[in-house]
Image (cartoon, rainbow, N blue to C red; front, side):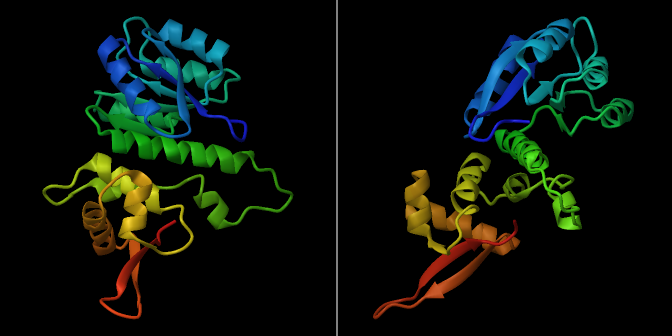
Length: 234
């Protein structure tokens, strides 16, 4: 398990140098995550899992020496607690079934967006943190659901965006709001993430329409009431 306060350590496994570097760039842009290594072959991946002890492995299927599915088997057969996210162009049901059977926590089909990858990595990290909190009390269904959860808000809210809205900016807006406990104005959220009030409000209103964000009105002495937003789905 990742130690509290330290970044989540990620190993990228892909035989294509440029693709691996792209995935590294995706990961390093996510707060709280770091890439600890890149492997080009299945053998290198197994050695680096053993030596670096990453928290998460981003694993391609098509490797030059050992298929990624076999690498997954060997990781699960060892004493390595790393979680594995398959990132691959392999779309056949047999490969997907094999990955699920041997414990891959997610399966991303190339090409995918940075928002999709970020959402899955955050889910895995959250589940690992939840599992690391020992408690003498039995878990309820809500506790279990925090580990076995469906694809979460960033990936879902990024789909079907209106013209002019981007998945990358939506990701920023979601992360800028979702951990705040009190309703906030669009200007407050925008200032936190470096986006204008007008642009931030467009994204927030889209989230309201999807049911992910609640809106309330704050009345002042004069003028129109201020719209304030609060994340409502976590």
